[in-house]
Image (cartoon, rainbow, N blue to C red; front, side, top):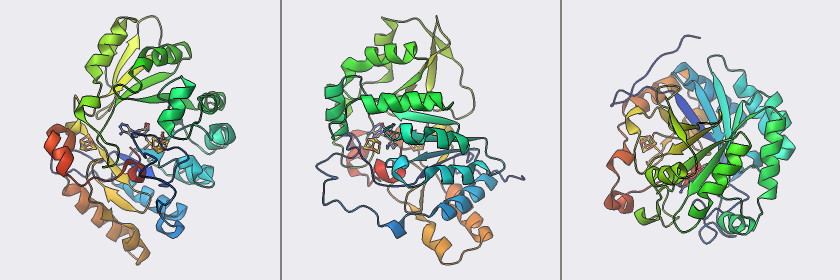
Length: 338
Ligand code: SAM
Ligand code: SF4
Ligand code: SF4
């Protein structure tokens, strides 16, 4: 398929699309959807506000025409959305798309991994912040032990999906888990990605002081393992990767806070209610759902997305200070999915 390459104001092409398929979640992770903010009375999006699978497919095809090569499905918890394999199947048949991944808390993988793989899913990133049941229950806000997630990881492996593990590290919460998680992942052939605690949204009480940086984690790891740097596999790769010298297993860092990577950020995000966000930390989405529902043609949608991308100048992590964190309106992670 003929692709049109579009560039933003900082000359960055559009390459990746993250699609949040749902704003709900069965967890209440304290760094993402804290229970006191997302309690019983919280109003989630009504069903008709969510993009339908047909709408997602139509937009995905248009994004691929505009240069997108990779799609990641996320949420909220994407596996809570009914019949996800059906959506994956639709997306995986789009010509010009080289990769589809999904980020999940893993609990529903034992039920869905096989069907997702059969539908064309290549990889899952499973979020797991500790191997300690009590601590995990406290972090996920629902008292869920690690067992269901570990079973999910195993089910994904059995189904033939590539599996990576995401671990958000927050000072005083789970920094004691850095080495146990490294050992577990190394021994099980899983690539672990340490994610710096980020100031997404405005409900998670983020403070710079709570961030454990890549540098700190790296020095700790070096006391236990020999690490060899791995070159980025492609332009815009987000994780800084290392390999344990005695294995072929990698370990990575998402350094959104301490070493920003805005200059090669090629990601656009589509929220569950059909708004386009050009940065994880930009509170202003661009409506595309109503535009589409009001009868816009594909060519009109192409023009709108092109104009949005051409106008993009976001580089929040490059510019982050305590002040920008406080004063900026930001979208919640559960709407646009990290
Ligand atoms: N529910 C799925 C999950 O947890 O994997 C997908 C959505 S979740 C918002 C996507 C990723 O964002 C997860 O790996 C999660 O750990 C990460 N995340 C959420 N809040 C974060 C924060 N404040 N800082 C860094 N990463 C965060
Ligand atoms: Fe749910 Fe994922 Fe957010 Fe945890 S990180 S509350 S699992 S969306
Ligand atoms: Fe991309 Fe925004 Fe993150 Fe920078 S802060 S890497 S522009 S999403």
